Length: 87
Image (tube, rainbow, N blue to C red; front, side, top):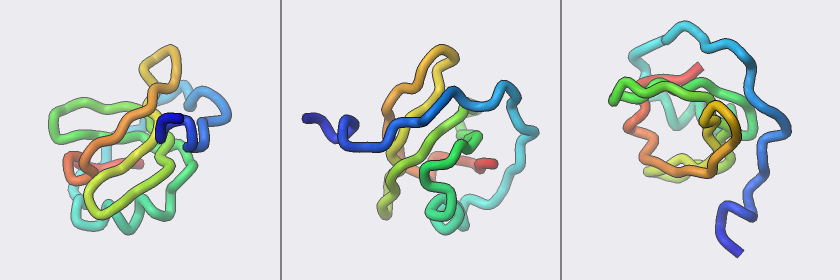
């Protein structure tokens, strides 16, 4: 069994809208992410990418969860400090 199989799966697709960006609170991201586990969030990355995410776990370096690719949820993990912000 892979780690992704042990994590909660999003109950439905994300909302059909993309929020307006909110930038500039990277230092507070871990604190706020912990309050938003297993909830839909919209993420803006420093690379310019943005996407819906359903986070399920967070540690000192990484966030784990599912991102919406436009058709389905895909399990992923990345360094949370690569996020510019989320809503």
